[in-house]
Length: 512
Image 1 (cartoon, rainbow, N blue to C red):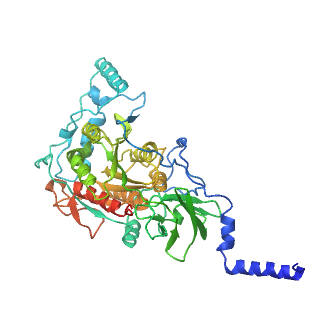
Image 2 (image 1 turned 135 degrees about the vertical axis):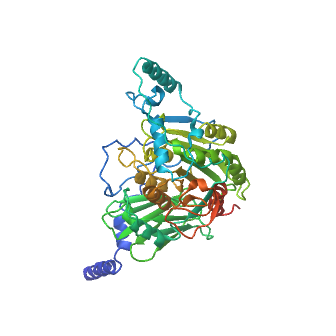
Image 3 (image 1 turned 90 degrees about the vertical axis):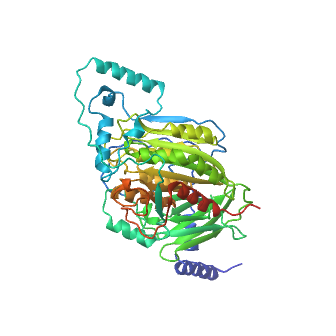
């Protein structure tokens, strides 16, 4: 039997140890007040739409997941298409009526936003995009209505550009930077680029590395990071078993310690991240066998407004070559293809998404049907399109490598209510989706900043088109760019996409 003085001594000693090991085991018991909160495969309701906020908005501490975990088992299905209309019931298609509508504005805007000397993309927009029966009926009704109304003279056409139009299949070159690899340079870029954006503070970051007992990386493991305050974030490890953690991006309270829980295939491990100490957290997870064949979910997220005709045409021409080269990679990936196209409010559609399929011929057909058109002002509906890409596609569950190629030449509308790109890039990290942002010709500083934000946070890279003369895209392929980048190599765009996929899949542990 232990005497009362002895018990008091033991309690005092325990208290002293807790003080000495502050924020270690004792704090861990406070953090572990309940099991880690994991995203579930159950559908989540759409967030409400609020009036546009002021910029930059304050970061709100996240307490529970706001997204559905990837859960699809396959993509062996026909192409399934869904569309979010770009026009409300009261809007009239003035382009059909001959008034000052979306198409004329788009032509004037393209002439303004593309650098001098860039040829018009109107030749690539003569075919209408596929439309549903209700959309066709609405246009026919509008046209009939227009016959009974007075006609207005259309605006004067935009001046013709003197340079020779670029041949449809001319080579498109691109460069690439990895802002996570050269993080100091990226933070300097952020500091000197003052543009409107959604602020997420990534100035402090930590690397999580998850391996199994053999020392192999554990890819696509779920990660839940939680503070004692309840502030939390979610991620999935990439093909190399890694994830970047940014405490200031989700926890404005400045917690000193976080519990990092990792799980995969029923096995779970826990580590602790104490801020200001090591820059990396390593965790060993007793994970099972590695799949024999890689699974790749690849989405093309495309700005389909009028100025994007050249880029869309190049992607159409090179898709089959890209797919064939990916299929021949050493990992022999089982590839699912998805396509999400977007324009803007007032256009024929806001977002048109084609869910994953493994039927390359059918996917080529829906891509071939996509035409560049509309987009009256400079910003476009990228927020809404990214949201549908992250939350509405049938991403496959455990074991997949998930990639998005975002091809755009304009930033998102920050003045719309509804989804915001920073919320969806954090959800993308939680679902293990890497975004590789491709800046097309005409992308301004704001567009570059936001595209790089999304790519860096999700673990992707920033890709940009290059030309013989940086400020003149009509000068043809080359090595020059107007973007704020350095130390980059140049390849053709299709080869660069294959390289990105190849490098990502090469990180996977070898099956055995």
